[in-house]
Structure formats: structure tokens, C-alpha cells
Image (cartoon, rainbow, N blue to C red; front, side):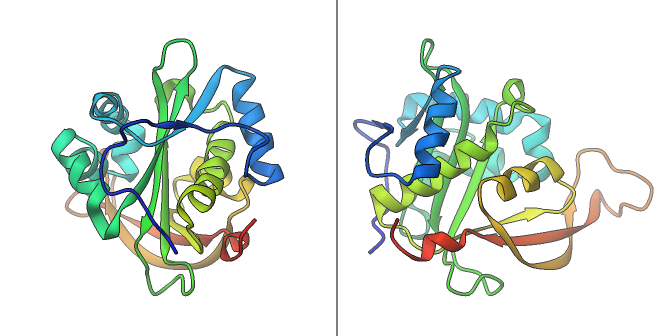
Length: 216
């Protein structure tokens, strides 16, 4: 049974290798640790300003404007987000030496018709200074494994935009598979000819991690 947290963590948990994770996520934790990064399960109010800083960056605002507008923009938003849908499992990618937040992600119960049998949604964001370093795939893998091991999550999937090509590549590299697509529109920061009322035609992708239907 899934038991996601519904509030801030009193003592966030640093995820360790050679524990209760699968081989791939142990390898992902090793890869991150080699560049002095650690994954932490659970967030505190003190983490929210750094999460909000990432949410304000153009790469996140272009594809995920709700992060700053209604999810992680301040402590009150974060508190509400952690309660949403019966709880959210929030994870941080942090620098070991400085405790600075290099990225964040979460899972939570949010089923959609396009992903039958995969009722748990997933999201991940990286600070712009860490993009292009091939960190999103291992961080994603750890979030998925941590959600299963710590909170009993099963059937994890995600939605993303086809034009967000870097994110799509990282999800595929982490083991996700494409299920289906849907033509849609989204707001954009930089309207171009053909965009209407600040919105751009795009394709919404629905993906899943098949191995998450069973315990690892």
C-alpha cells in the first residue's frame, strides 16, 4: 500500500547505496556520489527557497510553469503540494559539501486515462547549472526506486512534452517507456509565429516504468 508523506520531513533521509534499492539505482547513487551529490528523501521548509529558485529558471518555467505558480513557489504552496492527492514523496539532489539543492523531484498518486495501471505520477527538475551533465537519468532512477522502497509506490508513470527533448532522453535512459501521445497546447515564454495567445502546439507524451508494477 502506498504511504506517501503529507507534510514536511522532520528528518530527511539520505539514500544510501547497498541498501534496499535495485542494482540500477545503486549504480545511479554511485554515479552521483562520484561528483559529490547525494539524494535526500523528504524536504523541510528551509529547502523551499532553493526549490523555488529552480522553479523560476526559464527551462522549468517553459515546460512546468505550475512549479513556481502553485507548487513550490513558497512554503505555503509546498505544504499544500505535499498534501495533494493523499501525499507527495519529495526528493532533493544536494551537494554534499554545501548542502545546496541541485535538483528536486517528486512522486504522488495522480492517475490519468492514458496510463492505466500506473496511478503514480513522477516529476524531476534540475538547476540550470547542472543541466547537460547527464544527471537527470540517475536522479530519476533513484526517485523511482526510493518511492517504491520507502513508500510502497507501484505503477509509476509521467507526462512530458515532446519538444522537451532533453527530458525525454533522460526518462528513456532511466528505463521509462513511451505508452501513448496526445496533441495539445501549452503556454510558452517566447511566442513565435504560429503560436496563439501565448500558447504553442505541442505533443504530450505519456510514459511508464514497467518494472514499477512489481516489488524490486
